[in-house]
Image (tube, rainbow, N blue to C red; front, top):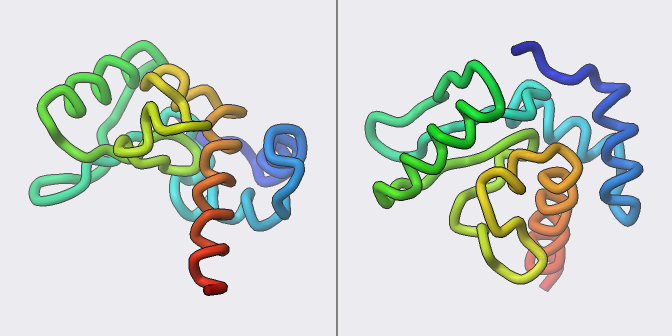
Length: 119
């Protein structure tokens, strides 16, 4: 799957994470996932990009990997599976792969990291 173009990512960022800088979020999504909303990356030894042919396939692959206790980065912003179910974060893999929800969650993680860095 080809990724979203930068202009579409900026529009998505503006709509889904209006308190964050849209160009920054779009750039982050391009670097992390190439703008691919169903990007899955397995972390650790033997990891790497996992190819999914559809959204349903992406959900199944990521759910299987997470169920096996592995760390997985999901979607446009490569939201780590450790964040699933945290307050304000997607609860399921399917929610994490929904583009707007993924961008909003990724923006929240970046904002938290920005606050920590400022301390």
